[in-house]
Image (cartoon, rainbow, N blue to C red):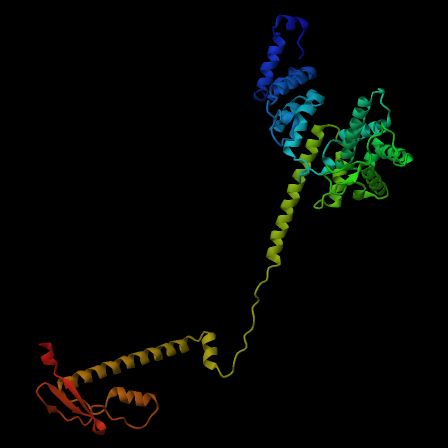
Length: 426
């Protein structure tokens, strides 16, 4: 609210302004129902006052919000709740420019996945911007009113800077057939190119420098080319758009965006008249994208189970000669028991033979008589299938007693001497 002359002279603040300052300072703390008694003009005055009070002294580097802010004036949840409970405030243009514009730029980043180029600005803002360029572009040929040389040179630089701004705006903004029809920018650019070609490179002194190379253009397709060439390229692209239909009739489609989605975005943005409408359209688009991605992931997960390689049951060919293996595979319990008992009996017989052999060796060491045939040698002979009898290693032993050792005569004239163990134990 503007102060009156009396307030400026006395240096005092009115009670209404003091109340607005308190409300603006604590705007987020009040319930949304409290603003039902506030009119539209008072609401715009409170929003404007809060915008001035929260204006940053040092602008944030890389901020896309107005006035170099880090965060919007009000959060999207707060302003949306206030306008839902108070329908007489949802048409405020001041709140739309100061609050909803920053909420849109803060929530949906420009040139991001959630914000296509077609939905960069509301439709009315795009049409208004193109109409402004279409109106001001022919004015660049106007002669300056002053005859001074310095003023003429200053006028030339100003006109060239304006041409640079207009060309940059046309290159960066997406173009579609409806936008061409409503703004009339195509006709204005065509007249500008014809006017430049009439002079055949001998332009008057007050003409902007249309042949200057523009190296500051972000689009690499137009970088390093004169302004006049850039306008000719734009006009040829717009003519191609007028000859096609559907999603191809609008430029700026991202490679990851389908043609159907691009056409839906174009139709949706044409229904937006304010920044709040664009915010709701982008929010709805984001929700639909999340749901479609979730359905796509569920489908992929289901396809993994259905398309997974599985091992099928195969029939093993049975060999005719391997009866024992077949009976074991078929689960013959009697055969398994008999085979286990045979194995156990073999183990027990081997243990008995080892025990008998150790007992015979101890008997020989003591000098006791042993049997002529060794059970271990006979078992080996019987197990190997030999029918001949193997004489025991102890057969034909002649004992010759000496003082400290014993001599045993073995077969084939061999002898073996054993020490006296009793002496060693001492």
